Image (tube, rainbow, N blue to C red):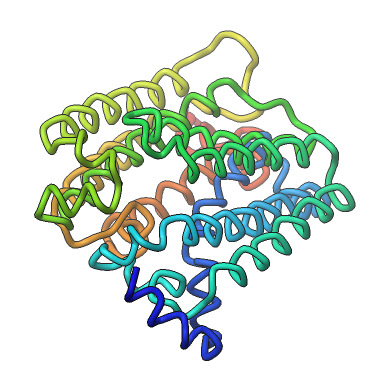
Length: 322
């Protein structure tokens, strides 16, 4: 507390870098999930739907940055005891809490007004639900073991849902299942990263109370189970032939399974290294994992848009008998 008071005197000297640190633009990569629904519905090859999806992406970036600022204000004392988060501008006193909250209000208001004007009412409702859920998480739910990770995973589901609503397509149940299970796995991985970075259990509890109940063995078990569920859900999606048919040959996604398995296993391995603070840092800094994600994304887009690229016969025409 005394350190925070001492640092508050330099808040007027906050730099552009401090303000950018408050917004956490590196975390915006999470919002690319918004494009999952439009991409699966083959809507990104048209200008208007692509712009609508991009609008939803921008809206979530603004709301996310606003909630990050509020979270930093609420967690400033705990962050000050974290080996990496203590460098955040609010935790070290570079930006006053009231200024951070004011900026958060401006960002959230801009996102909501922008969604009403440029998108549709449904997207605005999803943004409001995301905002309420995230603020509830920051205020109380983050202290509930397991529920905290489920809430984070649901945030990604809302992103995917908003993307589909922005372009006017139905949100696939398989999309929800795949996003939720994958993000559940990554959420438990984040908790494992936090434990690996903080050796002393008491220090970990000061940073996040749930870390007193998350043990390495428990998290390893949860990561293993959620990883298996995520991979199986992806497999079931590729092999499902009932219900609502996909607008592309989704069964061809089965052949990307080696990339999916490698990505999941490498991520799980990196969570125990103690060198990364969370999933975003792992994805952006680990070249093999980032390369795997980029390659899978390119292959998935090629499979989804194969008819547009190769004609009506698609990929099957490449190995069909003459």
